[in-house]
Amino acid sequence: MPYFITNSNADCAGWAVEKEDGEVMGCHTTKQAAIDQMVAISIAEDMPPGGERAAPDELSEGDFVRWDSSGGIARAVS
Picture 1 (tube, one colour):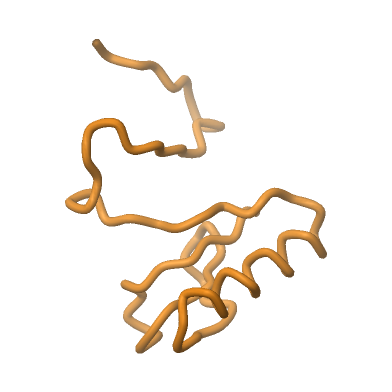
Picture 2: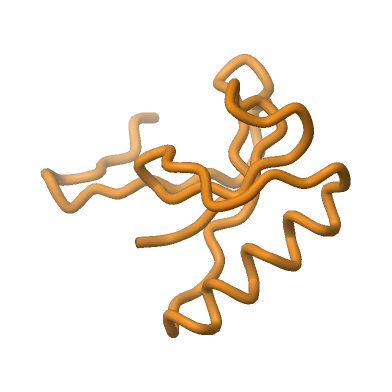
């Protein structure tokens, strides 16, 4: 399960490291500290870090996004 960082988790006052399902792994006062934990956990579990989560209203055209499409087929719409 990938790990992510976010500054919008209600359980943390600063930056959170969370599992894909939103479970908080740690809270940090700086973004860099959260990144460090996310990378360390990801390395320990032999998986790529998930990156930073963004709320839908924070995204702009051209931003890179990814999602788990294991429950179906992901398709691009033009």
